[in-house]
Picture 1 (cartoon, rainbow, N blue to C red):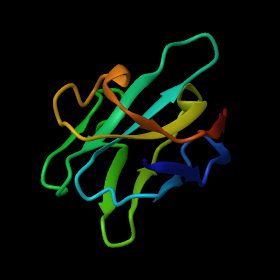
Picture 2 (picture 1 turned 60 degrees about the vertical axis):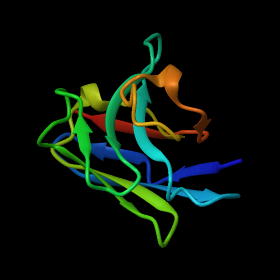
Picture 3 (picture 1 turned 180 degrees about the horizontal axis):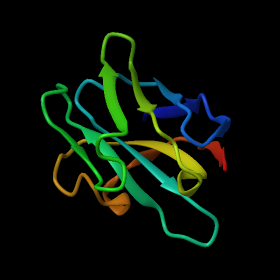
Length: 124
């Protein structure tokens, strides 16, 4: 079992930056694909970024490419999401997630473990 806990959310002005962290416990994430998703009110959960178990493969959604950066530190059992040039449309609850397989890395349904989420609000 992997427990995930996000932190780093908050209120930021448009154009600003935030860094989200996801700390894992209960098991090492070394073998897991790690992903970040977000969900705005009334919307489905949206894929943002994923990194494979070794950090050698990274993928981003077009909506965040060039603005967000995912990274992982297996020694610290954690993954991060650096978010720059934030827009009001980025307002959502942000989740990290883990799954053993890289297949369907961009599908929320594929992920086995989820954090509780952290709120990000971007004001205009």
